[in-house]
Image 1 (cartoon, rainbow, N blue to C red):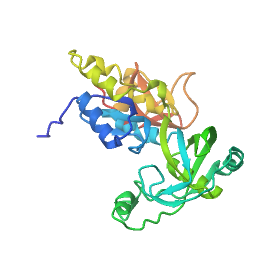
Image 2 (image 1 turned 180 degrees about the vertical axis):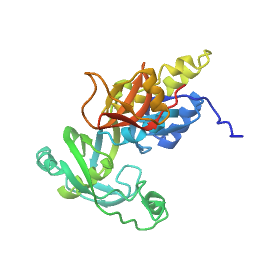
Image 3 (image 1 turned 90 degrees about the vertical axis):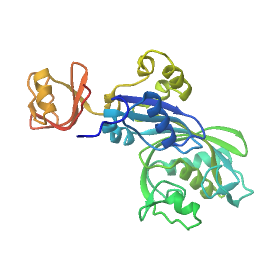
Image 4 (image 1 turned 45 degrees about the horizontal axis):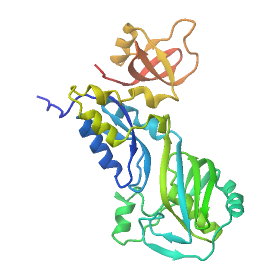
Length: 307
C-alpha cells in the first residue's frame, strides 16, 4: 500500500516578496506550512541578505519550475565602494580596501562592457557544487574556492542613483546563473575602487513581477481565517503562470483525455498552430499537459493532475 502524502493537494504559484534575513529554503518551508501543501519548491535562490521576488511552486506547479528559473530576472542593488569582502556582500569580512571612489562618468563609461554575453566568475560563497559540495560550505570551512568563469547574459545594467560618493544604486536585467554580487565586485575591481553589495532586491523572475507579490504577513493573515483555507487560496496563481513564453493550445475534453493518457492528438481546424516546438494544453481552463508540437501533432511531454 502506497504511503499517503502529508498535507493537501494544493497546486499553484505563490509570488512571495521574501523578507531580508530569511533563506530561500526557510521561505519555501513557511509557505508550504501555511498552505498545508504536500509539495513545494522555488524558482531561483535568493540570498538571505536579498529581498524581493521568490516564486514558490506548490504541488503540480513544481513541474513548471524550470520554465520560471530559465526566465529573465531583474534586480535593484546598492554597491558600497572602497572595500571588497569575501562574500561580495555586506555579510562577509573585508579582504581589501581602496581609497579611490568612482565618479558617475567613470561608472557609466564602463557599464556597456558588461552588457550582452560576458564571462563571469561566480562568488566563492555561492551554491555551485564542487565535487558534490556547495562552494559556500567549502568557503566557510576556510578552504580556497576556485570557480571557473562561465558565460552569462546581461541585457540591461544602469546606474540609477548615487546617494553619495560612497554608494551607487543600479538596476539590472539578466539571464539565468548571473550573480549580481559578482557584477558589483567586477565593476569595483575594474575601476580600482573595489566594492560590495549592501542591498539587493529582485523585482522580477520570468513572468512574475512585484505587482503580483505577497508578503509572509499577508499569507499568515489569510491562513488565519476560519474558512477552510479559502482565503489563502485566493493568493495562489495558476500553475500555467510560469509558462507565459510557451504557446497555449486549447483542446477538447476528448483530446484532453488522450493527452492525459500520454497519447498524441492531431491539431485540426483553421486555428490549429502550424509551428513546431513546446506548448501547453488547456481544456476549459484546466492545464492538461506540457507538450511538443511536431508534424501537426500535439505530443504530451508531462501530464498534470489537478483533479
